[in-house]
Structures are given as structure tokens and as C-alpha cells.
Amino acid sequence: MENRKVLKSGEFLVDTVEAKDVFIPEEFDDEQLMIAQTCQDFLDTEVYPIMDKIDAPDIQLMKETLKKSGELGLMGIALPEEYGGFGQSFVTQMLAAETIGAGYSFSVAFMAHCGIGTLPLAYYGSDEQREKYVTKLATGELLGAYCLTEPGAGSDANAGKTNARLSEDGTHYILNGQKMWITNAGFADLQTVFAKIGNDRILSAFLVEKDMPGVVIAPDEKKMGIKGSSTAQIFYNDVKVPVENLIGKPGEGFRIALSILHMGRIKLGANVLGASKKAINDSVQYANERKQFCVLISTFGAIKHKLAQQAIKTFAAESAVYRVSKDIDDLIEINKAEGMEKGRATIEGISHYAVEAAILKVYGSEALDFVIDEAVQIHGGMGYSAEMAVERGYRDSRINRIFEGTNEINRLLIADTAIKRAQKGEFDLFGPAEQLYNNLDAITSGKEENESYYAEKRRYMANFKKAILIAIHGVTKHFDKKLVKEQEVMNNISEMIMETYIAESLALRVEKIEGMKGEAGLYRDMLDVYVYDIADKIRKSAKDAINSFATEEESAKLTKAIYTLTLVAGVNVKEARRRIADKLIEDNAYKF
Image (cartoon, rainbow, N blue to C red):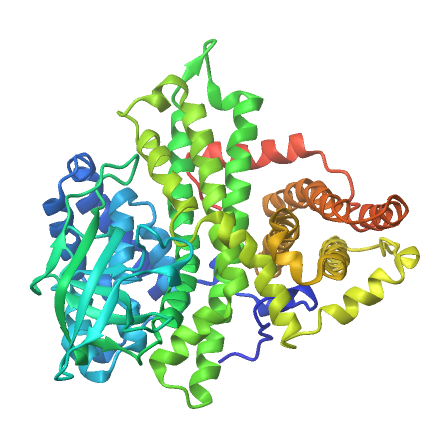
């Protein structure tokens, strides 16, 4: 492992790294780019030509296409070599996930199989289970599904009623219950099913084969989007599951479920990047063809604004995705060096970054919704026609804010997890927060004469973090243990944390690009516009949080401090966005 500084999850709130310490996409090596190109080639040759048929829907065609990807090795990128995979780094897995993310409903089915359908077994299963099943999941010989959600247990996963009773002879569990919204249900050969053993209060995890007597798969749901993805209910009626099909230990299922959800959220952050870039390409190519008033619409300032915003949000999200992906790779290596078994070292490394996982999930899914909505608008009436790819992209994008935990749940997790980890002593958040809060009158913007460009941006990030700490101290001091029930306030804190993490990731990436290439003109434009925009968002969120508890006098003092900490230099955003858009228009594609 390189000698680089790696922060714990959420620790970025009180610490910082230098540009040299982050990984950026400009550092992908030839092998990683080759894997991404293989994924792209598969979409171009095997998926896009049959997308209408898949979305008809044709579940059998989806199954055949998934198996083709397995035969090419695409399903084994994340899996260890000893089980038929390629044992690639987490960064490489994320790059593959990004590329496949442009595959509409195919992406959903593929990622469900490779991620939540395979990795619980790969990370928590016994050697015998891995040998029996993972080797076949790696090649697509078997297809997987993840069965957690129930009619009465969605966001509250541990509320599930599905039950597993140990047989009198102790050879198998008798499984009864119902699961819903199960991706790949219509054709999956192997299901990871979560159920409570006997009177247990927490879940256990089981491997269930679809052909076991008592497994009943309902017809596919009719959905708004991702129509080619099989989604159905599954019923378990006295299903006899061999005891050797228990994954991990009894009662470990809830931990497995949460760990896999963290992984799913992070990988969704990569998926939506691919979908965003596809939508941007569709947008600029249409804008470069469509004429109104005898000129191309790509020459209009209003269209340039939309194109630039699409690119800025996508580039910013991408910066955060690969920053945390490299942190995860490094933590996995640290875990292994400390003696942890490889599978556990991996999932513990991934699930540790719960704060960042929630950030990527929320920010990425909402950025994609923005990008694809603007793509439809750029297409005008044609954007509403099923002839155009953006119509499918618009419908398909909406699910990302719901699955892998709704954005409402994940927003609460951002603030709640960061605060709880600080309370456990993983990093000192409350000490600096209290000091700031008790010395509001001493707060200044910290601006220095002859400040360099990146010194200015580092100061902005440090100030945004101070604003977060002040808000956290105020709300925790006032609401104490009741804070978790003040969801609007928690959301205010989460918005501040999320925007700051994304902005800092973007700033570090731009600085590193300039160090590598000697200049970063358009990337500086992206950074300038982004920071200029979010300063007001952070200020507004902080004020909303403060005014939820503060007296008039206290609010005045706090608001003055927040204003000082969110003060940034003016930017000619019109010209900056035009320069970004002009590059897109010239390239006729997203090439940032």
C-alpha cells in the first residue's frame, strides 16, 4: 500500500488530506481502462441493440444476456481468483460498475446479481458454500437474488416476519414467509433470504435454491421504469433449507444485510455516474443537431447552462466516488495485514465508510435525476417520445432514490452515523465544535493576503466544516437524545456534510489534475461554480438548523458566524458555465 493518509469514515469533518493523498480517475491504469472498455463493448454490442426487447419486458432474454456477460468474465471482477473471479481492486470494481451503469434495466439486473446477489456469500459464506455456489455465480451459470424486503419491513429491515424453525432432527430449517420487490426473482437460481430463527429478535441469512419445494415465485410486477429487470414477490411455504445453507452464524443476518447495503449504496454511486454520462452525451449530441430559429440550440445560453450543470454535478460526484473507493482499498489491505480473513477484511473495509456510502447514494441519485431531467428538457418534445433514449433514462433513474435505502433514510444516516462515531471516540468532533461555539465572536473568514488559488479553496472547505461543527454542537446541545426524532434538523446537518464532502473531493481532484498536467482551466471553472453555488446552500441549511432551537439573541450571533464562514468570492458563473459547455459541444461528448 502506498504511503498515503487515510481518514476514517466521517473524519473528514475534523481533518483533511492533501491532493496527493486522494485517488482520481485520471490515474486509472491500462488494465482498469481495458476492463471498462470491455464492459462498454458489451453494452454496445449485446445490450443496446436489444434494449427495447428486454424492456418489453422479455425476462428470458434478460437472463440470456446476463449469462453472456458471465461467460465473458464480467461477473467475476469483484470475486477472488480461487472462486473463478479476477480479484480486482475496489476502485476497479467501481469503474466497471460505473460503465455498466449506463445499461438501463440491464444494469439493475447485472448489479443485483454481482453485488447483493453474490457478495453476502462471497464475504460471509464458508469455504464449502463458496466452492459450491460462488464459482458458479462468477460465471453466470447460477444467477443470484437478495431477499430482504417484506410487505411490512422496508426501511426497517429487522421488522421482517419470515421465520426459520430448526427441524426436530436438526438437519434443516423450515422456512416460512414472504419477500417482495426482489430483483431478479423471476429467474434467479440462488436466493439469499433473511429470516429470524425461532423466537430470535434479529435476522439470520440463508441460501435458498429456487427449485426447493415450497418456493413460490409470483408474476413480475409492472413498474414505471427498469421494465426489463425482473421484480417479483417470493413466498416460502415450509421450505426445507439444509442447516449447512446458513450463511455465517445464527443472528448474524442483520449485520450481513447492513454491510451489504453499505456496499450497494457505494456501488450505486458508481452506477449513476455511467447513467449520467450517457444522458449528457445524448443531450449534447441532440443539441448539436437540433435547430431552432435557424441555429443549433447548442448555441443558446440557456442550453449551455443546462449542459454545464450536467457536467459539473457529474464530475463532482465522480470525484467523491473514486476518492472513497481508494480509501476502501487501503482499509481492506490494513484489515488483511492485521490478520482478518480476506472476505471479512473486504466487507469490513467497505461497510466502515457508512457516512460516505450514504453521501454517494443520495448525491449521486439526485444528480442523475437532475441530469436526466435536463436531458429530457433539452430534447424538448422529442424527450417525451419513447423513440429517444432519454425517455427510458428518465423513467429508469427514478428508482435510484428509493432502493438501497430511500434517500430519506440515507440522509438521516449521514448525520446520525457521523455524530455517533464521534461519540464513540473514533475522532474528536465535539471538542473543536464546543470551542468554536463558545468563541463565536472570534470567528473570521481567515482570508490572507496574496492567497493562492488552492489555498483559498482549502480555506473555504475548512470554513464549511467549522459551520457544520457549530450547527452540530448547537443541535446536539439543545435536542440531546431527542435529536434523532428531529428529522428536519438532521437533514439540515446532512445537507451541509454532503455538499462539503463532494466539494472537498472536487477541489482535491482539480488540484491534483493541475499538478499532473500543469494546468486545469475548465476544471477550475467547475470548482469555482460548484463552491460558489453550495456556499449559499450550506448557509441556508445551517440557518434552518439554528433557527429550530435558538433564541433571537443566540440566533443573531450564530447566523453572523455562519455568514462569515460561508462567505466566498464572487464568480462570473455565466462565463464559466459557457466555457464548460463549449468544451462539451466541441467534443460532442462528455470527455472531462
